[in-house]
Image 1 (cartoon, chains in turn orange, purple):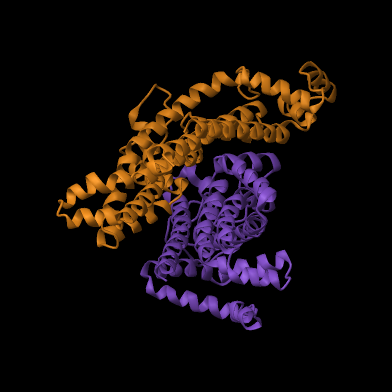
Image 2: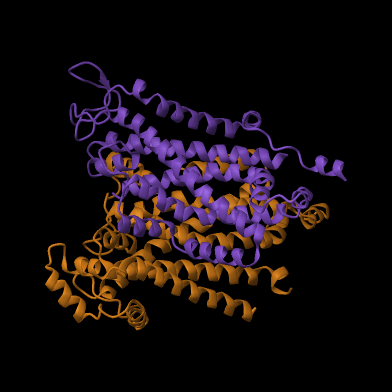
Length: 310
Length: 298
């Protein structure tokens, strides 16, 4: 078990290193373009030369990479070209806002998708199962940008119940959080529900469930005491991997609702060629994704005794 | 001995025969109502895309009459069934022509991703060992990126154009396809007909492409439908974020992006492209579900 965890963490570190190299090559291989991005399109070649010299860009590539990585690890992420402040000052508050959004999405998505998945998988092929499956296909087919527009049209334009933007200028307001959460929920829950259904349906066909039913145990107890324990192992992994998806989803939703979060920041940085901000955002995104994958792997092994004890 | 070899290796079907088989297996779709609905939706959009020049009532890029409501009459004849956008372009015509855009680029990007992914997967699964390790590590790393982050960084760095979008989609999707193909090949490579082909002295790539790949098609066809849905979403999202196909040619994601600021006052400009793209994705997802159901039944 400990060996497995160490292995996974080792793999995680290697992945992060390779990703950092790729990002560095993609964004900083051409030093002139870095100077142009930092100093602006209309800076003079002499100015760029001075800036490059000052910031050590005339050293060989590997030396630049090592010092960049060193600064990165110590938390010196460079200065944002667009905001004119250190990257961290903008990045961490934005990340916190996204964490709040993600927290509420998962608070609603996990119970909803698990309950629907279990209900559907309990009696495979029943009317309820078919309806839940088609419903989840339906909601997964509406991409976030489309459901954002459609929900806005209904709740903001027609019913005037909710605000159409979520910039939270006057402090935190839960009303502004409702639409972003609903949009992410609508697109995301279907996948977990379908995976839970598949896992539940598989467990229901096993011998020990049949034995339990034939022994005369009430159906309710068969489900809650026998089936669920095994059926919920797979969804755990899927839920952890959904965080990777959520990082994509928040970009669209935060952009649409003008929510001051991490996704919107990454998009803004990319569109404005804010080099150091892109690097920091991408590294954070990949870190979150790889870390959750690692937790999913280790957790799956822990939850599944057949793997744990073999 | 000779008999046993001919018995286990049927001759590779010609293109015509293969086509007939595909059509026959599509006929099986009748058994799945969900799949039929999906096929009908996809068929509807393919029909609109093919006959766009005949079906669209107006030129998609012609500026006629800004801010017309759905059903408004055009002074010089014709009706704006779905209204016009802020530049006076007919929304219905742009949606019909947009179907052509999305149904050109999405299959094209999926196809290139599949070619790369299949070649990677075949090589990894068939040779195993070092090629497998290298290819698997590369795809692990690409797959560890949140997809949209990868797309945004690539497109923002190399620029937004049709070719670059296809390159980005291929880059991001091929590893996932490789994993599926690799898994299938690892299973199929131990079959007798592969051993027979090896005994006959066929080259590795011939065995992979002619003997193994056709037998892996079942799960891949389901995945193609799902992936087409994802690619349509991707093209839509990129258009929506302003990183998509350059204007003015109609592209559903771009239409939503251009008009979303006005969506509260003129919802028709934005809502109809949203319905169009969602219905097409729904079509592919239902089709995939139907195909999966049929393949599980066999």
